[in-house]
Length: 171
Image 1 (cartoon, rainbow, N blue to C red):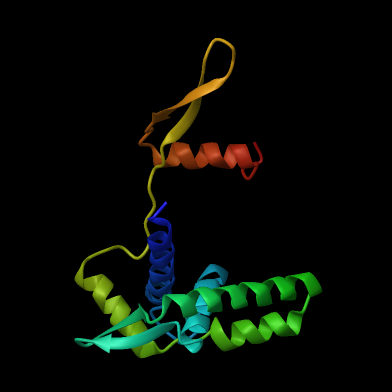
Image 2: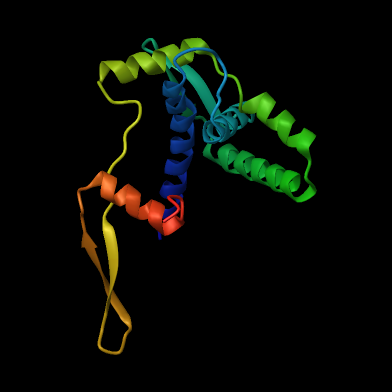
């Protein structure tokens, strides 16, 4: 399991990237509106404040680099502990302060750079895909022995099937 530490380091790099890439969805203003984006910004900004990540400008472009993986681990643990405390105690003022401080506002100049970079490589801001269907394969005794994979390649049919399964279509 020698790869486990590198997997952890990659997750911190993903947190850093998420702190930037979410900005592509906000072409105006300086405030994140969507809750999942606020969570991503909260984590990135909290780790920046802790000295674990660093917002840097290289060759005219903004990046968030992992400055210290050990500090990132420590800061992520502290943030998780604080969020769990807030949830356990129903501390509305505590979560409001945490979000207002770390998860709400961004620098429009950084956002403008992110959007320009997305435009330059012609990547859509939003996209979706068709996921594989997984079906258990059972032996004669009924024990699952494998998984069959199929690719329906029909986005609408897949979305409607999920909505049926989740009861969101009223079917």
